[in-house]
Image 1 (tube, helix red, strand yellow):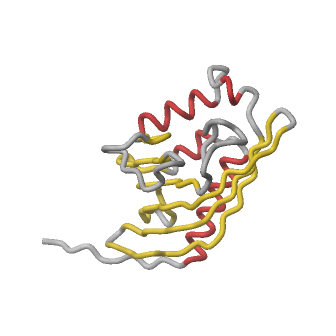
Image 2 (cartoon, one colour):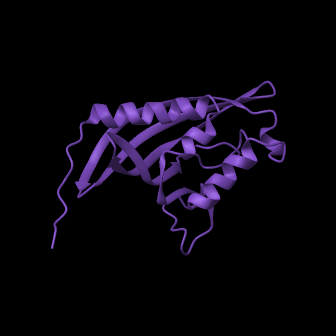
Length: 165
């Protein structure tokens, strides 16, 4: 029976990957962003009133597997995403990137984010932290799990999460 071995990962490699992901999102390269995910992926955004919410038993803003994530991408690129047509401008700032643990081929990462959404003369921030499980693949990473917890008490600036956090 083969055993899993831990992969070697540096914080710089993880940061570079997260910065590339942020660039893809800020430049609305959504198809390329969707390619960053594994087949068994999960993308979760809990509600502001229950940031530790479990999508299996609690209401969350987003709980996407790969099929739903690709559907979200298609909708955001179309006119059907009324809150995002035309697309908002966004700028993401990623900081405090930490490798929490490495478990076999899974790299558990945490980071803080600040995403500014600019739309129709208004600007508003989304602030929070990420939890990732990255999988090393072909010299880079794929996202197995991505959770964007909001530190906001409400969505007062935008009223909804209409962009990818």
